[in-house]
Image (cartoon, rainbow, N blue to C red):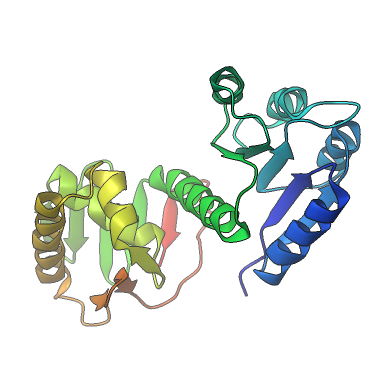
Length: 244
């Protein structure tokens, strides 16, 4: 079973804080709520978190200061700021500190959830992007040399084929959302890029047909799913080989 993700949530409005915490927990996230910046930092040093949601205007320590202190400990942790401030200077300050996103109050809980999910997908993609090798069924996929090998047959992939297959491998046996893939690889999800991605999906299917246990299926209205026999990471020499 996949381990639940943990969110550090700092909000000094007690009612709003409890409401959002209950909502996020109902959506499957372990959410720890703190009512001021000092308590938030102490909580961060004692726990392991995947993302921080920080109110900017808090007693004892504001969200900007807290974010800087958190980033000094873990420079890679995603941060979303929540604030009633709408001044351009405040928003720029948040992004200057390194905010991954910024929501001004009032906002819907659904919007916050969607932004959290989008950031965590990006983070997951970045973490898995640097894996040099994937063992994909009977295939060996070298992401650096851009080759896909099965037995003595080695195929050189184009850059786009390599990027798309890497993204599919990073989300193996999960839905890879169509728009996310387009924006990650083609930057823009316009009609022409969408048609181009369909062509590359067709090419990858042809390349993978030598192993019938591997399949790329369409998920109507959502995206694609790379179906592959489940495996476990092999840690020989670090995380150099990821077995799917």
